[in-house]
Amino acid sequence: MKTRIEFLKNSLLFQMSLGSRELYHSNVWAWLIENDSDFVKVFFPDFQKEVYTVLGVSRECKHRDIIIWLQKTGYKGKKEKYFYVIENKIKSLQQEDQLKNYTENLWESTLLQGTITGIENNLEKDRISFENKSTKEQVVWEFVGYATISKRIRELAQSSTSKVIKLHLSQIKEYCDIINTLYDILNEALSKNKDFVWYWGNSDNFTKELRDLRIEDMYIKLQGSRFIRYIKSREELLKKLCPIGFRLEIGQSFHNGKATIDMRFTNWKDKHCDYLTIGVQIEGGQYRLLVQKNGKHRGKEIFEEFKGAWFDANFNYLQKECRTIFGEKKTSMRKLFDSYGEGSGDYIFVYQYYNLTKENSRYEILLEEIQKDLTKAKKIIEQINF
Image (cartoon, rainbow, N blue to C red; front, top):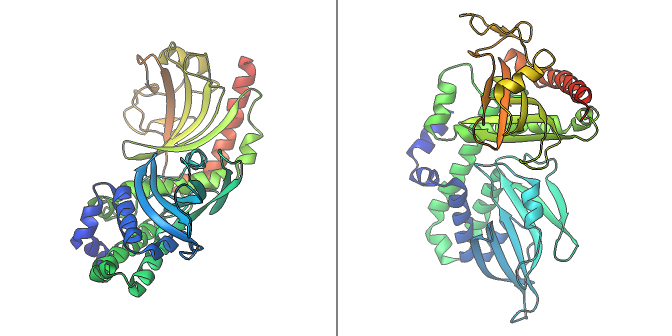
């Protein structure tokens, strides 16, 4: 591991990638395809250059990371035009809604297929399809991981007849080594906390090494997304708890260097209506019970309304050491409750939390806690009689 870390630290190509990671890799892939159309097969293995001619490659066009423009061989003008889309995810996570929105034809060209990339896949399946909004036909999106991309690039580069590719073969090989090393380091980091919602190691060097390489955020997002996959595989258990008129929301975001994981019930329609969102949020090392309403409410008002049944009204935040909440759960809270959004006019978010540790953050333990708390949230909603 030390050798791998030193390799990345000393690699100019790796340092160049840190400014805008996804754009950097997209630019490399587009350059490869522009210089040898065989590289389309890295992302679309069934591509046949005898059937389709590559007309060009666009980056950041219509919000797509890469579009490969094609035309059936033997046709000219606007006839028989097609395209592939590559949605590149290395710093951010894959989103089904985004892929659905991108499943449509552009101008006079028909979408053939899409590829979604990443260090690992946080979607439920590696191969999914959506209805083309233009033709109503199904279009396949397939996940291709960075490790596979590296392997295919290396193989195609070694056999390429392009003079430009041959000239830059050593840089291409180093680029593939960077991907492989990055993949190995992140997998090693993820294996340390497998099946735990825990982001730190057993030594101070663990996060420092990731931070020095400026890939700590990638690790945290992937670690959080693994738990989201686990929860979504058991989503039906939580849906059964959802009250009538409400919906279950499960999602992940990233704030202030921390993964934020939400499992909550809501009847939100827009920020102007009177709504209630109640549930669980895990952010970093905090397990939170939350309530969110629109901006006309105040934090103290919400705490008073939900104390006892949801929030801990007996929490002694003035105690200097070993503060506990929700019974005997340790917390580092220094106020009766925390909140944000007050004064914005848009929303108010109120919560209390207890501290997570490696011991109490195992997936099975957290799922049991989430089920228990969402059961409690359901009863509260039913008593309010929404």
